[in-house]
Amino acid sequence: MSLDLPSFSPCDALVAVMVAVSASDHNLRTAEMVAIERIVNHTPVFANYDIDRIRAVSQTVMSLFEEEDGLDALFGLVRDALPAALFDTAYVLACDVASADGRISDGELQLLTEIRGEFDLDRLHAAAIELAAKARHRTL
Image 1 (cartoon, rainbow, N blue to C red):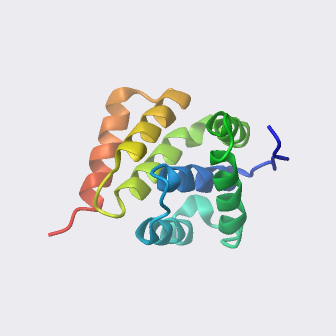
Image 2: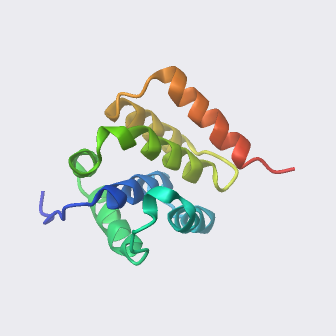
Image 3: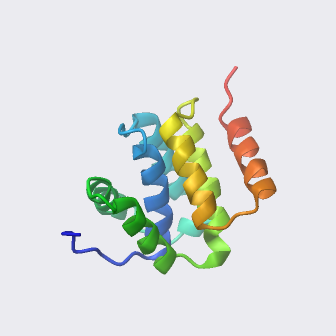
């Protein structure tokens, strides 16, 4: 791989997972990027996070997606930075971003499946997280 990969903080890793889900359908939707900023601004795990880091993390994710084994490299960065206690948090945030625009694309579904596998999340717990995200982002 030709990229010089940065190291991520735990919060960078959470942002990277959210950006990856948003970019998984090859389209960074405005609603999803707004959701990421909202999540970073209002979720306690990000209390001391510099929101200006979102851009650099997003650029890293997008660069990795251009590489042949970029998704594996991204998961490596995330696993190195993220404590296991935050794996379900990462999945919650990923589901929220995927649901933010009111629909979940096939690319997003595929990446969510891969994230579940990477984090070895219990399928029943993951289903509850997915249902909660759909409910939170439902419109009338």
